[in-house]
Length: 260
Ligand SMILES: [Zn+2]
Image 1: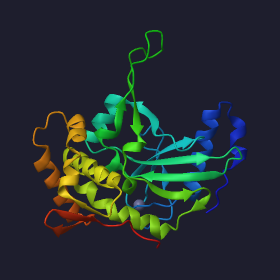
Image 2: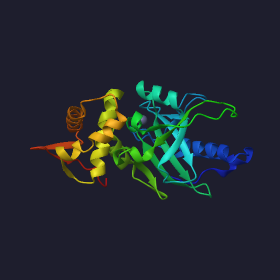
Image 3: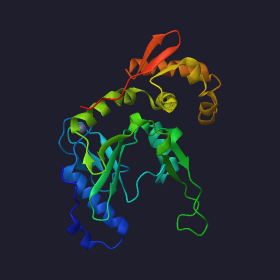
Image 4: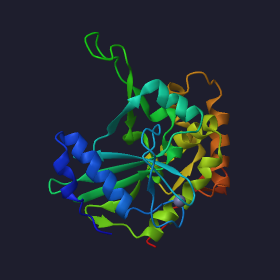
């Protein structure tokens, strides 16, 4: 994988954000493989395809690219809030590719956030644009990366080092099953998984997970039966192979895909 962007393409553009978009899109089209199947490339979507920049010619998964100069921010700006919520509810949100480039236009970091982890809980409503703005009243959104469990943050390139493709695909395979759940249920499943991850323990108990009740009530204010809902999500996580039941209210988190 050649991590250098083609700087020659930049000469036709003036604005920094335009240059970043052109160079990073070109790089993805040349160098990037599909993390969801064996395809060695992904293709650019026809211009103006809503919320997707690339799609896989083999498995037809859709990807949206976000190029960033700075890395490690807990949130990233996305487009319209209402459109985003509609896309999540209709199960149309694309996978996200977050790409960080250096001043010399090298790709330094690339992270895949599978679409299953882009749930309503991690979408933050921004303040409406002011009356004087061209699109006065328009409401954008942020994606709260900090709320996404590590299962949903797959490193494809870390600090200039590409992760072996096989490993990336294994990581994706591990969580693919979440995509089969309806979005209304998947939000809960991912929230419970996030909470389990935050415990930072391989083994945990049901009562530890019940501690998530107050925070789950904030993101799901209309649900009064949080505990049964938590138990249901643990069963789903077990069926997906992400959690193992040890009996007597004890559970084990199945580790990520491993070094290969
Ligand atoms: Zn594919």
